[in-house]
Image (cartoon, rainbow, N blue to C red; front, side, top):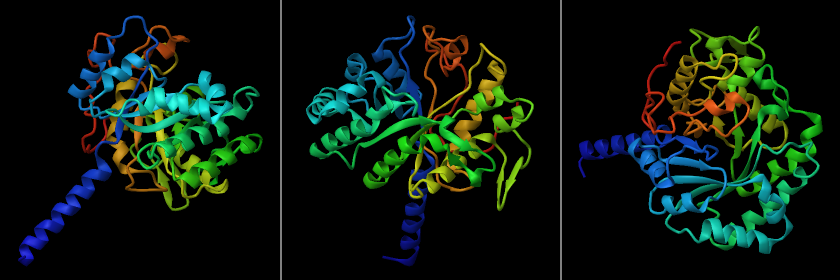
Length: 346
């Protein structure tokens, strides 16, 4: 082989590697809490037509699973909180759940099983169920020979953080350690990421005197927070790195984070406007491939919340997180899963 051919092959390999780390990082959460939503078949067609390659599905809706069959969409499927008691109770129950909702659908590309969503460590009924449910589901996934294809995790929110500034000092609250530490140990042992719901909107709307809209929507012209050698130009990066710092202090320095939800409402509360939401989603999609100051250049797998406005949700702002209207019209001109350059200003 000539040196020129070898050089071209090397360049091609580097290009493919580059694409692998920067493309296909954006998924969209498909919620069903609306009485005016399109059929599952129409939704899958919409995902495909918009090149949305990943979906978070909160519960194993059988009609949606049927529509997903053969679609090539990678799926994060949820064990809803209402199923935790069942799957935590026995391995046989976990076998039943995994068979019915995962293993019997071989033509669906399952990527994650999210065991529980935002279970509060203080919830005496649900919190003790998460770790045994994770263990049972993972053992069944392993039995089916799928543990390298399907990662088992749980989705948490950022309210478990006790120290959130500066990002390098991020730490979990003392009262949640008994809950989160065994989960971290489990994820480290099986080499699975922690799923985290990250919402700069709520941090901004809860404290607008201290957090600027520009910082929350990726439009600050320069560094807002300097933390040692790391400069933070947007709140999203700061929130993710706070969680990474907390994981480091709790025995999980090797863990990756997958953003299992992030979004901005277009109406219904303070700061919830169409323009703010459009700016946030547009810039979030552009930013996902860039990593954070703690882990620069490492694309962040991110799931936008949510596919549609869902009119059966409460309170009012929860109805307005969709990136599409229920009639399938796009709310915002988002270019899913493409390499993006530059941010859009407010």
